[in-house]
Length: 57
Image (cartoon, rainbow, N blue to C red):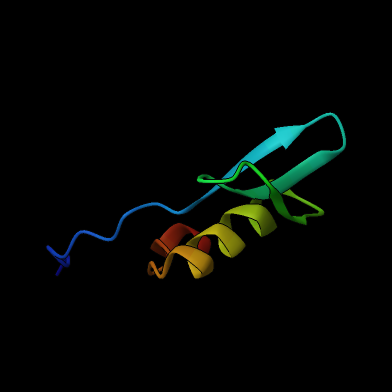
């Protein structure tokens, strides 16, 4: 069952010239560099307080 509680997005995962990373949306600062897209998505979900989709578990 899915949760109906809305949790705003504070962090985003994106790819830049230096590779994948997680950025804070409000300040635009890079929080952490990541070795892969999956690592960036896992970190973004954790920082936003979201549950990982089954595909990433």
